[in-house]
Image (cartoon, rainbow over all chains, first blue to last red; front, top):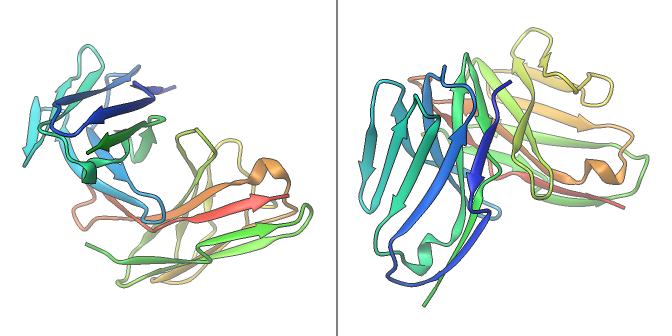
Length: 110
Length: 114
């Protein structure tokens, strides 16, 4: 059974810091891995999707890497801003289902 | 991307009652998904709803507790029946993106059962 774990569970940092969020999964037979952002009352927004054959994806200040063999992914946020405050979820796709981690709650203060 | 709305956005309910959550999508989709997010937990898939057929439930979820309707290609409802405080969660619906690689999510329904 696929299990997805995220570390840390919560993070509070001053504006401008570079951050690394971690995600690990137990079954390396995945189709892809995604990072989502969850804002209260606004649902989830997909940030980055990495196919199983890819090593990383970048979008603006965000960079996500994938090491499928070791069951790990990291989300790197450069020059964090207060608007980045949210819960970040990683999810892997096994067959046709998304399996989510428990998330990292990020607060960036001015 | 698809625009998904949910009603209600939040509710406080008494133990033993039932609540029906509505999910509306601005485009026709084959499959709609219902998730539960308990406090401090990850999202867990409850069931997949296909139009014109019975919903497919994940392990640990049953139709009697979470009946689902899917009357057309843009709408679905999830009912949380005979509620207990353990049902206090955020309930989200989602649909596949056109490529099928990701999912779009509704804003969620925050439920508190007293």
